[in-house]
Length: 364
Image: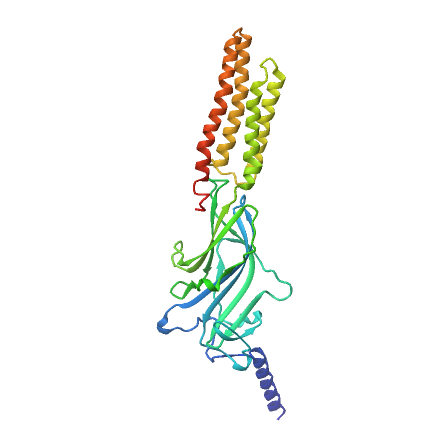
């Protein structure tokens, strides 16, 4: 008799535990979190997604990495799960729902979505993980989670400092193929971007691209793409690079008006401007990767250094003429250089700036 009472008590305790484990949701008897939700005619499980771009934390050009903070929401239907009506105390555009603690997600079948080419992921947790799990009246499941992460972005600096970068953030299924699940974005109204995001050197635009399937594996896996279009603002480089370097070129040209007999003044002025431009060029190059091609800013700095070097070379040639007893020829050569060098620099600017600004002023 005592054994019967013990078994009965153990059974009641197990039932109580099961009840406490799932007090708000009813699972079908054949439910297994290892099996995909059933679909008609064996079609892929449709998983819809929306995203909230909370912040663009950093654009690391040298490492070619961007840091983002996003909230990704995934929606799918699982007819094996039903919420208890008395616990559904909230409602949104999709209908009435109940909210479960995110730790309960371990008992649900979940899509195996990951962020492709992510370097590091961080969860801004205070005590409870910033995530939510909803079960709707029609058996729709919504899982939402906020994370911030660093993701690789292949950048092209040919047009630096008026370059435009296109960074693709890919959310892919790791194990389920496109014959098992289908990922697609919801209507644009369900996704939003924080309008208070501010970047020091870039303006940005966000585009949610259609679902895709990977083509670099033997088996195709579904995924979604969020494309960020970053356009660099040229104002910083106008003030910090273009204007100062142009001023140094003018100073080098003004050194031509110092008499050729004043060797220390001519040499000191020319070498100072050349060394200053070289230091400025090195400082600018530290902000971008060591690419093997030439950017627009490289062309500008090299031409400026070439003009400064031309002023120093002009002084050397004029000095040779004067010390050879051909002062008239030296004076004539200096006069020609005083006229030709600024004209050539102006011609260079009339060619350089329209090419530089092509496609930039109209935002393309």
